[in-house]
Length: 356
Image (cartoon, rainbow, N blue to C red; front, side, top):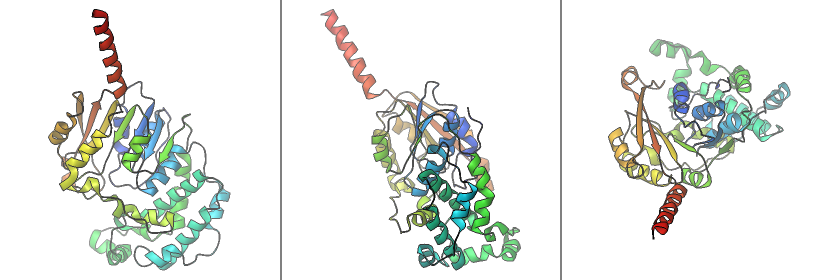
């Protein structure tokens, strides 16, 4: 067990408070953990701390970059010289200015972001670049009201007006008006300190979930899909950062797991793709669709060894009423792998042969 702390990420629906509880449920002989929907990386980070080899995957590019910086990366940190490279030069009118000026940020801020993005490419390694982009992600989100990018510009301007914010919400939110550089530097030490080597070849992937499942071999597959029936549309929350790091507008991915009409069908498709894995761990909660009974019924198509554990859990985004009633579910499914089934069949055939 490594005593490292996950830095502040700001990811809606993150599992930081219960990541240890989840990872403690993994079988003792586990060597490789596959985090299919890694999101803000809290479960992957905890699994890395516990000494597992971790394979993190997410369809959002910024979540992949985050995992590359904090999970795959075992040693690269940002030096004083790296920081000087990032902030050196004159801001200019690039991709962010042309597409997001007075949409999410003020013109000057967009020009600064364009400069920093260009300079990050001058860093000496892919892991350093990923760490720098992850810190910029943190800075950009700190400047956004409600920590997401689906807020209209008029509302952004209102909430960044400290007097207006205090009058209506009793909070001045001064941090929204601190510079991007300020937020980057404020978080630099904690992000650098979170880098450690757990002596495993951890990996970060940026694949469609089914392509990732087909590619990866692991002892445990951990599933934390978007919770259907909640407000968690992650592309609308964070897709802007994908565009920023790519310097182009990326086509959004399908909203498979947030559409109630197709939820059961999508879960069935997901479960049917997991047959090669022996242990499945699925996170869900009582505020979402399908409910626990529906999920249990669906899971029984694939295994008769299912355990459901419940735990009270508060998400920062939820209101007071939801905070009192929210229960996190952890479904633990033990599945006989195809190889085990074949071996058992061969054993039975040998026994029958000996009896003849």
